[in-house]
Length: 258
Image (tube, rainbow, N blue to C red; front, side):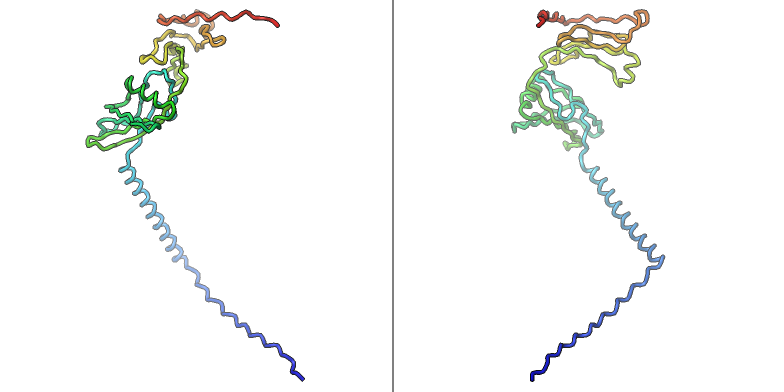
């Protein structure tokens, strides 16, 4: 008879003895480790500060271009503006102005002894004609005596397709406005065209209070004064001689009832 099969005995599992635990660090060792971390972090911060100072000393600064603002859109019939920026560096002897265009053509170059810089009539006409389809980037860089650039900044401007096409009647308010409202007689009204290279003349001033122009269907009708109690309480308004003659508004068609 065949012998019955016997199951093989399973090998005995001999578990490994647990690794001995490291002894707990003493308070002196913990304090030493913390001190080393503080020293390492301090060294890294010191290196970052030194690198930042070196970068600021070697890299050219960026003058703040006060006017025009980046992204300004000028009407095509406006006179050439004055580009103003801040950057009174002692080592800057002149300022280089470069106007580049998106059309890929040659850039316009100019030099200014000090801010502001106003383009000539031919320069401004070229800038306007080439900034309708794309933007014009105006870059202003300070030049040292050795020809190197000290400071640099740029703004992007464009020219609209539609002109203003009419003179403007606007209020000139001294800044800050909080001081101007204390004495409204300092507020003046001017009337003129945006294409004029000179400041429009004052046509109304010494108003006793805030004034506003009233219009009907876009036609200038007059100027009202708010806040005047009686003529004796405030001095009368003074109307300056106006070289511009406002045409009378067209007569509206008679009203027809349905």
